[in-house]
Image 1 (spheres, rainbow, N blue to C red):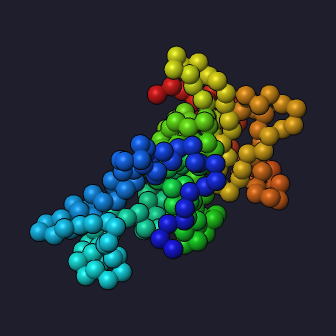
Image 2: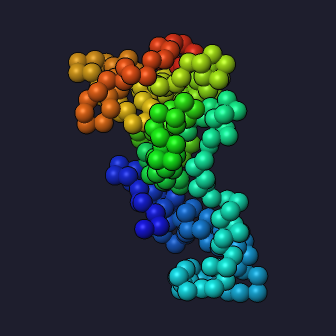
Image 3: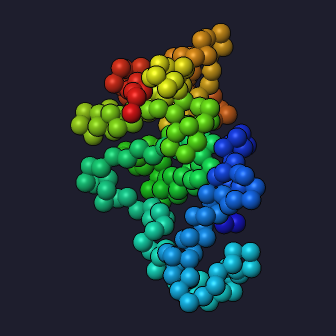
Length: 232
């Protein structure tokens, strides 16, 4: 398996990114893949590249040139021990409807870090958040504006771990349409029945299907104004 695929519900962001739109064009994903092989691997130099007939398993040029590029471009190193010992903190996020960077790629990477260092040690310096309905770096139907940088600064300088963030969906004039509470992995948001669906305070964090509340990682009140979404 080379790619885990796209989540159900992300289809609205496929046209142009994954599926050619209009049909006679090529998608962004195909353009990036073709150009990566042509130029990053240097395949185009003196050779004709046709993605429809290219054999990734048997072509010696591809195999011989892949390893050097892999060493400098692939995010596969899961050893963050030196980063942690230096006092570094990191927040990663991805939209569940991102058609360019498949969200399962980040989820898989984060879980690989956990597998190597253990969940407890990973949480000392690393948090991952997933944004429902959000496309690549923004857009989509979900709440796509977050102030993760302020949360990161507060974590580094004041020691308040960002177990939750608040995301906003903004109109073009900057007005807020609705907000959502984002929960650090492996917690997910659960709607509080009878609450206002447009408010972040109407959501709570539970741990997967077990329904364990997010109380075992105390941190700053997620509704502190410094964690509210701001316009870029």
